[in-house]
Length: 143
Length: 167
Image (cartoon, rainbow over all chains, first blue to last red; front, side):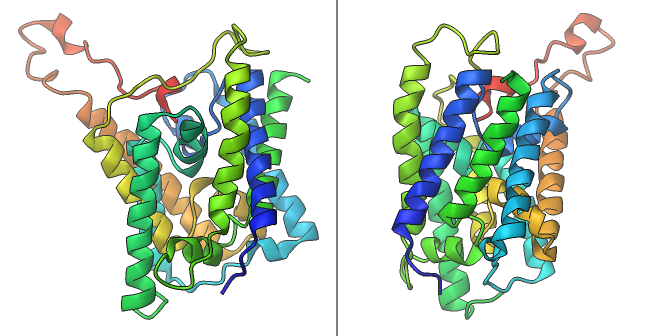
């Protein structure tokens, strides 16, 4: 089981808040990852560049950690390929249908006090918690 | 600094925040969602820290008439709480609970090259693409049958949910 890491998590959160603010200040865009990725799959809107570069930034950050601190990518739970596929489909379809994910609704939307984002965040935490409850307490922890 | 460079730097800082905050560890995400088990509240601190900073800076930034490098702010303006919003969030939460991944950490974790991450991200992108297909069907109602009698009515539909409305 992972340890409680309030300081590291708070620092990580502050960086995420700064990143979202920087993107808003410079490009006027919302740092919602599902929206940024999903926008690349919709009909072209002539705003591909910033989306691709933001994702390139995410990946570059990932590669830096892979080089210097790969333990941040410890998975630590056991899920079968079919469960991962179902999960990916749910996350991809659901975030587009509901116009946002943890970043777009959970961080940016709540920061604007958006009622839609508050409802969305409560909903995805609730269904996430129910799912984890079923896996951990009814199905023995792996799937 | 120009617009493109800032988007890259934002993504970089975002990824560092996710990794430091513990969001790239599915077991930690599952630990946060396991309220009745060995609950790990760390991720509340990630969201709390991010909201604290962005709630203040958001208001300061919106005092400006425009962003630095763009003509307008692309900020969502809708207030309606509908079945799409709740159904989408519910579906997302199920996938998040199943895998411990949400979109940002999953893309960042691609750098680890681990097969569960790759499988998840491919499925996620397929899911997003499926949505664009389904959305096209939903937003093109009654257009086809009227084509012969009145061609002008055949293409009045505007695509729903675009651009700035994406949170």
